Image (cartoon, rainbow, N blue to C red; front, side):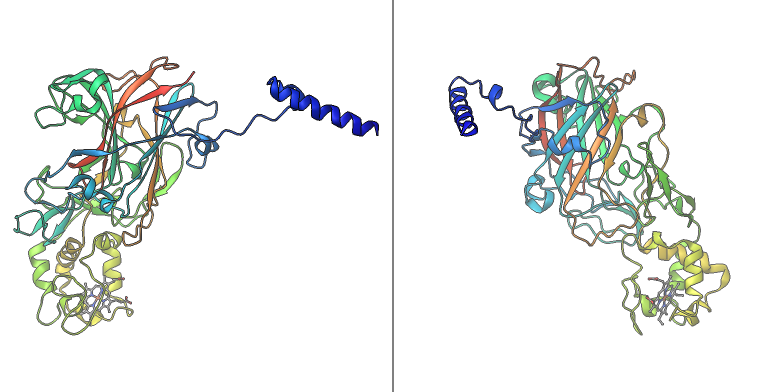
Length: 453
Ligand code: HEC
């Protein structure tokens, strides 16, 4: 009875409490769990523990900014011999096959670093950049049909732009027009001042766990930061799309320790890290491949397509194939009892084996760049991502990218934006995304990154 009376009292007090908004005094409740909500700025909250992995609890409840997208540049093509590299040619209507990629960002900071999370949908996975192919396919968007070596394919990328020093162009200053301040005379260039570009690239930066750190200004235009950069063109004549590759994979496992300490394996069909000179005379190799008596074309196809006059065999002309086989393994497999073409291989003159393999590797594709340790200001921006790099299957359906870019708040380098005592401050930035492209991009010119108190 007494208990009942007491309960009644509490209920009464509770109702009164509600009316006087003193509810908490009577019914103490645990603090409610944080729920992620959409914000209008990219809000970085302070966190004591670095959210360095995609599964970190911080990202589950962090507020997020949805990025509205427009065409930033389209209808651009690469110069002679660079083919099939413009998957975002029509802008929004070609990116992610025209479906909204739903770009979303989150951010965090701790005492020393800023962490920027970016997520977007891209239905196909494009891990190569300007790979060397011998007698490769045409580009439906380009008239150049001359073959032998060309550079083919392009990677998926996301780039962020920050103002370093009062960048401006004819359209205005960076704090007003954002990225448009780095677009001048149709180039990625400012009129005055400089812009920091963080370029995450599926072919050239993510494999080693970095974003490519670049800047653009009024005098030099877009260029890499100081220090050794992440990748060099794998061509005898630098910059020439039609020159032969210098290196190929040496056959050893490509394992690399990324800056976050995690070890990754790199698929040699797409990434070149452990390398050896690419040797052999292609024209001699071509002749042997098509030899009327012992040519591989009888089964592997006239141009490596996999269908020959007397049988079907592995297609050598598929991206990523040739890089998976080192010279030594092509030789040993061809000469093994397992190989249905063994009797053909046995007739290839020993002195011409390397010529033939140079030709077979060219039918596939040889990575257009080789990767190397970055140093100095080129090693500032780390990347963490959900990309699987050890064994790439470009045929499987790809859904979305999740990337975290990590950088020290201040670097002391003139070619970087500095987030000096950032608490309570906001910094303008722009975002650009590329689907199998590097010239055409979609994105958003200006947002604010705010470091919350
Ligand atoms: C009589 C038909 C035939 C001829 C001719 C032939 N091959 Fe093959 N080769 C095959 C078949 C079939 C396979 C696939 C075997 C398998 O998947 O088990 C193969 C596979 C290979 C592979 C391994 C590819 C893989 O997927 O593992 C290499 C390397 C190779 N051949 C090299 C050569 C070379 C070099 C020549 C020319 C000297 C040649 N072959 C001529 C039938 C042939």
